[in-house]
Amino acid sequence: MKIWLDGELVDESKAKISVFDHGLLYGDGVFEGLRFYGRRIFRLEEHVRRLFDSAKAILLDLPWSAEEVCRFTCETVRANGLKDGYIRLVVTRGSGELGLNPYLCPKPSMFIIASTIKLYPEEKYREGMALATCATRRPAPAALMPQVKSLNYLNNIMAKVEAIQSGALEGIMLNEQGYVAECTGDNLFVIRDGKMTTPPVSDGALDGITRQVILELAPKVGIECVEKSVTRYDIFTADEVFLTGSAAEVIPASSLDRRIIGSGKMGPWTEKFIEAFRELTRTTGTAVD
View 1 (tube, one colour):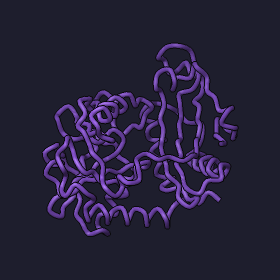
View 2 (spheres, one colour):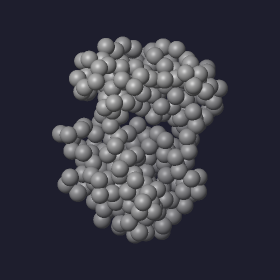
View 3 (tube, helix red, strand yellow):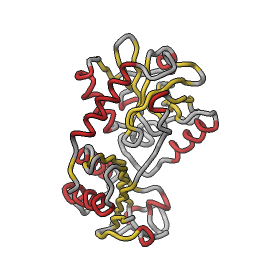
């Protein structure tokens, strides 16, 4: 495997960062996860723009332009000869002295991985998967802005551990007011009586790229979607619930905290969104060749 690391493609065995890198030491950095289908990267420009937005929010100055990062990403996919797969684009504060001071890092470091990923078992995309409510809450926006896709993922990881230990594959994370923010790594959509709802960014949800795709597809699929606060009760009593994310794509949920959602299987609206999403990924994207 070839990894793009600070300006050159290197073998996986040589793709190394310093133990003094502040991304490793303090989680000081930002990242993006992207999919590519048929050697076309899906929503590349949107992901790169969000990367730059996240970097700006944490005062991390990037020495590359957005166009250059797009080009580097395409080069990495091309070098690995993959048709379909997943990209992890990571920018760290860079190597520096010990201590929290980010100004002790002379320059940031960036690496790009193009590989494959299998987030959930294939049958869960047909049958739906169980969810569990996590005790770990989503940080308040005043503590860590949810729009920033930072390397500080311990909050999500601990929530994921709770979900797995309870027998679920994914967990629901609440904000401090008790409203649903998002899952540990995915956004969430709730459907009842032919209307669809998703938590707003102000409730702690990441403004996901795939989330935006679903909002764009909703009128074409034929359903109204509104962004408003969601409770666990709304999920318990929903006709359908599905999750979205670049890695997860679109996947139905069958239960929450052992309460069956709807029929307990993939519903008709969810199936329509999965078909529309897959059609979009097959026909659009930035060509790597």
